[in-house]
Amino acid sequence: MQKPHRFVIDRVAGYADEAAAYLRRRRLTRKPSARVYAPGCRGASYPAETEAGERLFQAAAKLIDAARRDSQ
Amino acid sequence: MFADVTANQRSAPEGAPPSAAARAALERFTGLSRDIRGGAVLASGRVLAATGDASAWEAAARELIAAADAAAGESAAEAHVATESGEAFMLRADGLEMVAVADRFTLASLVLADMRATLRELRAAPAVREAA
Image (cartoon, rainbow over the protein chains, first blue to last red):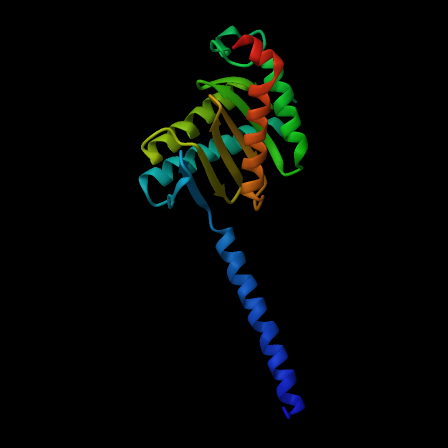
């Protein structure tokens, strides 16, 4: 039979793993991203460091700015 | 809140849905989710309806559409750009284009599905069928 303190340690380690995975996922989703789909569901990601990505992020910023002006 | 572009004949390409129908469709779309900050419906790059200043939305939308097309190397079907200050979407369907801005961490697939439904409804509107 498993010793009681080992059971507690396993449970705590399990929760810590879950919390770490949550933070990892959150960090990933917080990262800015640009994705474009061509007809036929062919999609590709464009990091901000690339020329296409930079152009997409600049255009998106202007669109977001237009929405911000709506609410003012 | 919604820009009236009915009087702007330059903004209505031939065969495009009437501005009033586009405005109603856009109003329905923005009412679907609290996460949506604004948007615009365009035909051939000309704004039919926008949630604010039509010319500002048209310029910004055209830029995003051009950037998406350049990235795809052809006419892009859709684009999603997530930034720290919000998320921008572009969808091209049924001969129309639509752009929208949503809060950060919005479910992109849901926003795009709503945009697709909006353009489909707009194309199926009786006034549009008569005009076609």
